[in-house]
View 1 (cartoon, rainbow, N blue to C red):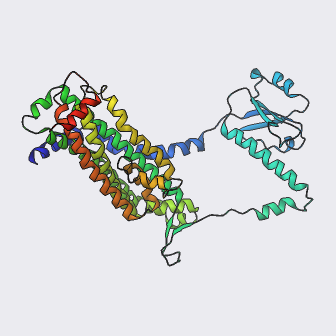
View 2 (view 1 turned 90 degrees about the vertical axis):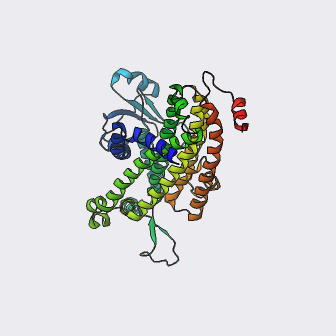
View 3 (view 1 turned 135 degrees about the horizontal axis):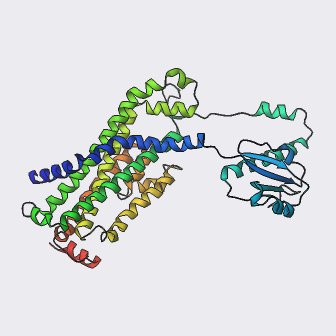
Length: 427
């Protein structure tokens, strides 16, 4: 154990004292927040030139009711045919496109947008929604209802749905408020964070083994330690670096939950906000809940990293360069990518059979389970998943050690799958 501890400290100090580690640790939370906020800011502040659209309306119902905006300017021209309009308002005319509406609006291909440059999904949805609304209004007018506009304005109702977890009391004050939107965001962030840690630090294990093997460093170290001690020390040392980084992030987030969120969002501001913002502030301000999430995250990061790091260590010991290791890395990464795909289905139904079994299978469970936890799954599922995960780590470590103890002494030739199988059978 003393020799393993020395290797752990060597691996930890070699990486944790680098400026890149310190900078990454401090800037990553800012970067993650930026990734979440940037798309919203871009959508909010991005502006585009107003696009001129010539409207040819053969139905006589739509053109005069289309509403121009900062994004699109409608100009009606019913004197030209579609062919003449395409010839007149070409690419050099300055017109963005031609909106042709046939005499039967509801028929397929009756409404066409012919553009001189690339269109956008938002513009097309805007035009389609306006036309749909106009046609609906025209159909309602056929019923000769007096004060139709006033009636529609009076009956228009927007419902805000609040979700609670049933605790048997039925009292709002004692039930826990939830939000599938907030759970989706948390599950996505936690799942992607775990994916990044496994990939980055797992690859770090492989690179470290390959570099020391090619430099014949392992040939010297093995005179004082067994190959198993070297492998375990290297895995645990790099794993300790990952846990240290996550622990620092957890401390920053928990501190923000305890002090920053209540200071920024006062009770009056939250009370006058919509339900989504209330749920978000309530979740971020719940220090106990945030702490619990990070505890689970650390447990699954450690288990997932140990499982995959042992495979990365075995892969690195079997080759002489990182490029040669791609043959094995592809196979190692396939379950991780599959876990990401399954994670997307978790957000539709976190209790589906696919989500349940993927969160129990050790090669996909870290990412899938951590994405399910914000939705409030039973505690026994989390415990079983962790037991299976750490039990599988013991098995993969035994398999990896068999390959590692022979692979670190092999040079100049990439082993075949048959040779790897023979290494596993050696005593």
